[in-house]
Amino acid sequence: MTLQQLEYISAVATHRHFARAAEACFVTQPTLSMMIQKLEEELGVKVFDRSRKPVALTPVGKMILERARKILKEAEGIPELARAYKGHIEGTVNMGIIPTLAPYILPLFARPFLAKYPGVKLKIWEYTTEQIVRHLRAGTLDVGLMATPVNHPGIEEHPVFYEPFVVYTTNTYDKEFLLPRDIDPNQLWLLEEAHCFQSQVINLCELRQKSSQRLDYEAGSIETLIQLVDSQQGITILPQLATLSMPKRQRRRLKPFLPPAPAREVSLVVYHGFARDRMLEAVREAIVESLPNSLKSGQDFLRVDVDIRIEDK
Image (cartoon, helix red, strand yellow):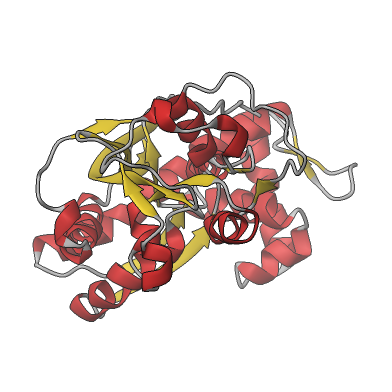
């Protein structure tokens, strides 16, 4: 068994086609097919079901692929370990960030990080929490940035910062700070269910069932939530980073929660066995350095847990 054979398995699993996989690996299709067949003969099992179109993994092939991608990731980490030992941080980082965080954190840390480490290439995807976990397990992502804890087997969570929630509303309140019980569920706009942020708002407000409204709409983005409040009135809850670039007329609609403010824990997450520790620390440092002082002050927050189920497939 060789690393090259494992790379070929991973390529076929990704492209679901032997010819496209061979092209991606810069070899001929007969060479790639022969190497995979030799591995199957060595193991005494079939990795791929070639009778299906597109080609599919067999049940044991799925287990082999997961282990193969872990091995390939470990192997990729060896050169980086040597470079880090010599003081160099280089290579590609495949990173997934949840949509309620990506538009606000990326403009803060990406450019300073890349300027500090010119040998690094940063590839970013906006994925939901469930998608990040699946891609980490599959080996197609190196790291995720998302709300935690998710407590999923094999996923290691490294908390980076706590981001407080604030209320955005057209209502008037005659007090400086709000409590979760002040939120009227009949007026509350939520994100759609795929977002872990929805589950945190539900947990924060202790909602069991959203009350009926004449317009019942679950938004796909935080910007849509803001526009719904502006146009339809009502209430929504926002993470603080989403409010930093608001114009003054919108900022007047923000109300803080009573300290310790409810907040989401934002963590870098990797799959068990991740070998690029120095790269992970460099990303963490860049994110922390880019945060506004209000998120670096060390003040106490009340963490709101994520309540999202990630099923194994």
